[in-house]
Image (cartoon, rainbow, N blue to C red; front, side, top):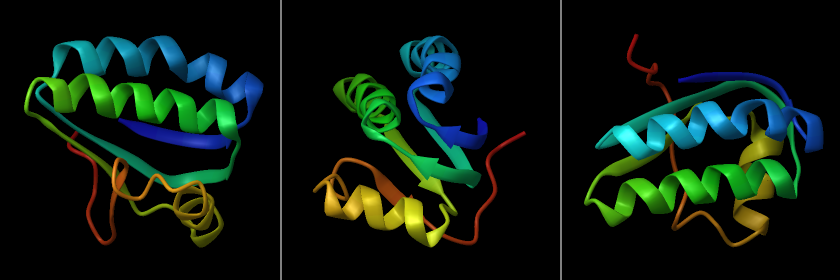
Length: 93
């Protein structure tokens, strides 16, 4: 899955259902975050919910290539252990 833009209130609302649907049906999910320029608590909440859904089934949830500002917010929120970050990869097509 590839996300772009701002994951603020309106951005999080736009991706909440697709992300919940994918996380409910996939064993592993990679989310390409290279195009996300801002993330707020609502965006974090969507990502955490997806990660928890996948991890409950023994799967792996990974955020790919977030910009530094987004990665810093994830780390500052204490979510780096739950929202794994990888750099240099691409989301599966």
